[in-house]
Image (cartoon, rainbow, N blue to C red; front, side):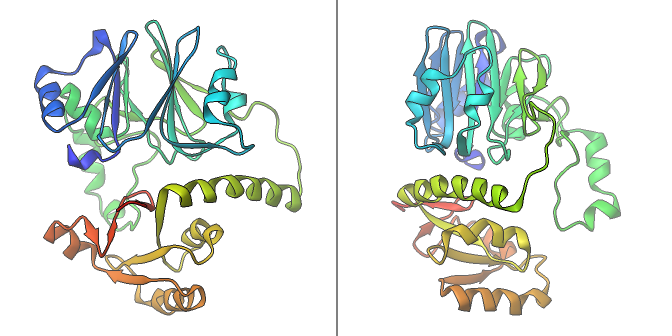
Length: 304
């Protein structure tokens, strides 16, 4: 169960996991809580907020912050129950959001899909990890996906995501960003209008609005830890934080041609940084480096 750090599983009472899984979860210290006809199992470190409504409850799992500065409780209290998605566009962070009412569950995640969410058709349940859902319901590994992952073309990839919404387990699918899970089906909630031409300044203004809310929110709760590579994606992730973060470069699959780029970035930002062998770290079973308790989402708890 430690593999599912910050994870969760939500299910309807009629779709309870196997008794053996429930005993294992309880033994691992995962508390469970009922919300009407639903039960949520939660990793001890996972953050959960519950906002009661006349129509049901809004459950926020993870880190969510309003870009306009509104309190999360106020935003959740005011969203239109029948169509909450336009109002929830104001949220940023890494989170999942559940709207529970009677036997109906609507589930979505942040617009980037940073907080992964998985479902199993025919079951009124969602979870944070594909393997967590598979183990809870005894779903087998997919032979077809296993064969696909053995193909030379796939094994040659440095980024090993599976295509589309498939997972390594039979009957478990990933929820695609900008879609929500609703009563046995996925539905797209964005975009809601045709595309229109915009300009660079408008794009940058929206970007600043996002990070003006997100960066202080993260700094108040975590000591940021970012991977530093020669790629644009990693720079885009840590650039809004300036020099106030810890850096790491995992050397497994790391092309040596990128080392001068990484060293130049580290020297320019004057950050604490390490090159770390992910193979050696995994073999030794280490879960921390130095003083930080490392979290696989780019941040470490500030209290670590």
